[in-house]
Amino acid sequence: MKTAYQQLQRHLLLLVAVLVVGGCSTAPVQQGDAVVEPSFSADRVLGDDLAYVSDEISDPWEGFNRSMYRFNYRFDKYVFLPVVTGYKAITPDFLETGIHNFFLNLDDITTFFNSILQLSGTKTVQTTGRFLVNTTVGLLGFIDVASMIDIPKHDEDFGQTLGHWGVGNGPYLVLPILGPSNVRDGVGLGVDWAVFTAVQDELGMKESEKWALAIMRAIDTRANVAFRYYETGTPFEYDWVRLLYTTKREMDIEK
Image 1 (cartoon, rainbow, N blue to C red):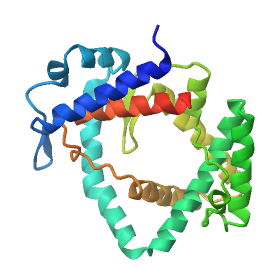
Image 2: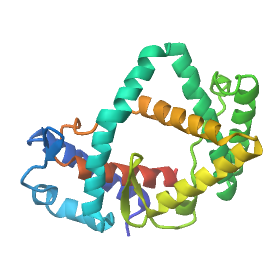
Image 3: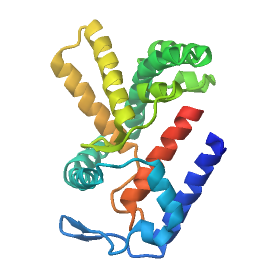
C-alpha cells in the first residue's frame, strides 16, 4: 500500500507532466471574452496517469466548475486586477507591506482556533506568541516582529482540521471569485468566517467596518498572489489548477 507521501509525490510528478505537455502544445485561445479550449483533452495526452488522478479527484460538477472558472477569469480581468493595480499604484511599498502583515496577523486568529481543535499544543503556543507580540510590539501586526525573533508562523483552517481528523475532500468545487476548493474546504471556509465574525462582534465592529475590512483583505490577498488566468502556458489549465490545489491541500494536512 502506498504511503500518503508517495501518493503526493505521484501527484506532483503528474503535475510536472501536465506542464511539460502544456509547454509543447497550444494553450487555450482567448477570443474576446471567450476562451477556446484545445480540441484534444488532457486525458488523451497523458493517458492512464491522468486518468488515475481524475479517479482520485472527484469532479462530478465539472461543467459547472468550468463555467465558474471562466466567470472568475472575467471577474479577475475586469474587476479584481484593475482594483489591485490601482491599489498598488497609490500605496507606498512600506505601507503595502504593513497592510499585508496586518492581515497575516489576523489570520492567526483562525490558526489559533484550529490548532486547538487539532490538539496541537506546539502550534497553539507559537501562534498565541506570534499574535501577542505582533499585536502589541508590532503595532496591530503592521510590523512582523514575531518573525524577526524567529517565532514560527503556522497556517491552519477548519478544512485542514476536518482533514486532520480523517474527513475526505469531497467533490472538487470552484467557488465564485474565491476559486478552487472542495466540499470539505467550502464548509471549512464557512466555519472560519463564522469564527472571525464572532470575534469582530465581540470587538463591537459595525457591519460597514466588517465589509470594509473584508474588501481590503481581498484586495491585499489578490495583490500577493502571482497567478494570472490563462497565462500558465498549458492548454489544460483547469486540470492543472485542480491538481495543484488538491495536492497542496493534501500536503497542508500532512504537515
